[in-house]
Image (cartoon, rainbow, N blue to C red):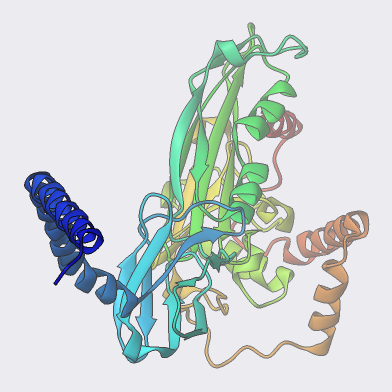
Length: 414
C-alpha cells in the first residue's frame, strides 16, 4: 500500500514525534516547579487584587497647617464636615489626613478653630482623585490668653562702661514675656524690659542701684506691673527711691494712667481722688504730715493698683509727706468713688450713664494728637489752676519745704 518513499516519511514523522514527547517530558519535571511559581504568583495576584480595588474605592484628603510666618502647627484639630464627618489632629510636621469612600464624594467643609488664631473655614469639592489642601492660619492680634511672664535679674555684670555714675546693680529683676501675639510682645518689651530698665538705670545719678519688680493680672484683660528702683552714693544720709506702675489694657496695647480709668475730665478725677485718698489715709498722717494732697500734678504718673473691689493710690516719699513716712498707700473702695470707671465689671458710686460734653470731647480729641509739647503745656496750666482753686479746701498742710522739694526731685531721678 505504501511505497518506500511514503514509509520513509512516516518513519521520520514518528521519530520526530517521539523526540518531541521526550523533550516535553524532560522539561515537565522542571516545568512543574515553574508551574508552582506561576500558580503562587497568580494566588498573590488574586489576594492583592482586592486591596488594589479597595484603594481605588477611597479618596484621601490631606495637607499641612501653617501660620503666616510659615511655622508648622502641631496638635491642631482639623474638622471635616459633609457626607462624612471626621476630625484629624496635625502631626509633628503639621499634617492632617482624612480617608473617605468614593461614593461619598462631593462638597466638604474644612475648618480649624484655635485660641489665638482667626477661625478658618473653607469648602472644597472632592471628586474621583485624592485632594491635597494646605491650611493657612492667621494669628488673632487681640489674643493674649497665652501671655506668660518670667523674671530675669540684673547684676553688676550688666553695668555698662558708657555709664558715667552707676558702677553697681544689686539684683534688680525685670520681666521676660512669652506670647504668640508678636505685636503685644513687642509693645510690652518697649514698655518695660531688660533694655528699658538698663536705659533708665544708666541715667541715674547714683553709684549703686537696687530695686524690685512685681506683676499681677488682677482683672481679665489687664496686666499690672510695678518697679521700685533705689539709688545710693557715698555720703548720702539714705537711699533715694522711686516707683513706677504700668496698668496695661492688653487688647488695646495701652498703658493706662490714673485718669484713663475714668470717663470724667482730668480735673474732676483728680479732685475726687484727692478727697477720697484723704478720707482713707492713715489718720496719724492726716494732720501731722500730709502736704499738697490737692495739687493735681502729683496724680500725673502716680502709682496705683487695681482689684475688683478697690483702687489703691501710692504716694512716693516726699510727695505728700516726709521721707520718714515712706510710701503712703490709700486703698479706696470702688463703691465710694463718684466717677464712671471704664473697666467692664467695676461698679462705682457714680449714678446713671456718663454723658460727655462737646467741650470735653473736643479737648480729648485735641490732647490725643501727637503734639506732646502742647498737651503737656495744657496739663501744666490746668494743674496750676487746680492748685489755686483747691487751696485751703482740705485739711492739708502748706506745700513741702524747699529741702523736701529738692529731695523729691532726687527721688524722681532714681
